[in-house]
Image 1 (tube, rainbow, N blue to C red):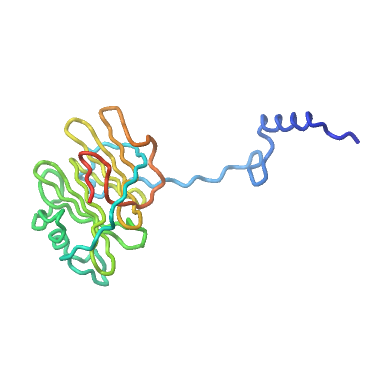
Image 2 (image 1 turned 90 degrees about the horizontal axis):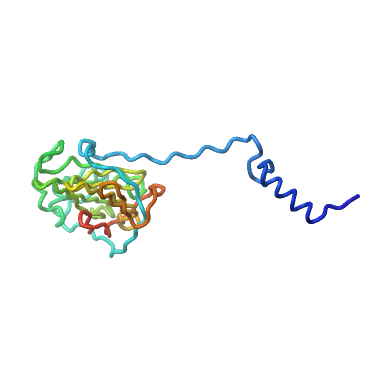
Length: 237
């Protein structure tokens, strides 16, 4: 019996790779279908009426560090029914970043100053919703805060501002789009880091050009925290 030579084995391996007909252990055989790819979550606008004139964009990874946020001293306590039953205006009055809107009227659409209807979404992954509040000013600048609950107390985990603000939920992340009158736009994606919503990605668009920390598509959705290295229209607590 003739033993295969080293040259013969190498040639056979190259032929197998070129024809794509040899399956590696645990791989797919010829003709075997590939497993389905799970679909990425699509952005869901929190306030659809405000979303019409805000551009879309991609994202890139950014990180920041800050001290842990503290509970609001004078905010109402959260009972067994959860944060959805608290007085939203009382929460705003207890938050120095949103206090100016604590007695504003509720608005149902863009074009007026006031507080948008509150929204609730689980951004921390604990199965319980966070409170998301946005308010619009006469200058078309908006302010947004996110609140969670810890030991029955309300804790602010994100504060940011921008013009023509259109927030969206992407999986369990919060994506905030803003746009200026000069045509520039920004998309900042926030993710829960265990203590707050932090910047996962920050991308800006100037006309047809998009610039970010690292160009790319949205990362797989997860939660994030508060301080933004975002720029002039994105601020953080």
